[in-house]
Image (cartoon, rainbow, N blue to C red; front, side, top):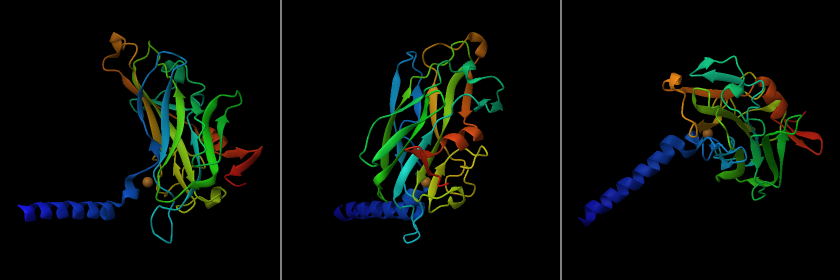
Length: 259
Ligand SMILES: [Cu+2]
């Protein structure tokens, strides 16, 4: 009995070890939202507490792992203005208000200097907060995970629509070395962005076309009867928006990408 128990224990340890080596715990863990699925919130002033989880750093040539330090992170939500919208996968020509009535100022950073020393919102010309950046200080040490807190405004799904869910595609950059656009690579940045033709697509890189998402499920108003089972709506930012908003501005100067 003793031996058999011991053996089982060893086998489990061995399996765990093989799992770590074989799959590489870094390989599948991408930067994502801690809570990627929420319910709609009928109150316009409601909010959902969430975090960006930075799972690993960039490729470190001396270890061969994705464990180099992260210097900063940029997070951008679709502005809902020139975003592309699909309905059950098919392009939708109308506006986001066909499905969501209160999108406009979706994100607020929760102040936190525990990892990075600086942070600020990324705003549109009207002052709406579309995302945030955080960076500087000692940064996120390779091998650790980072949790970057923020809230999203309560999303109200258009009661007249057939949307049973609306998924917002979130674009994130984890920066390990400050470079210009031409310097984007496995050792300098992890790009978790949709491939929409922006300069942040990162073709061939680890996170290519593998963005984070926030799915909002309909939960307040019933689907109109004519809707049947309802539809799933996906909202992606435009290339124009990412080219404009995915950046770190500090004291009026662009820090990243370097110019
Ligand atoms: Cu990854």
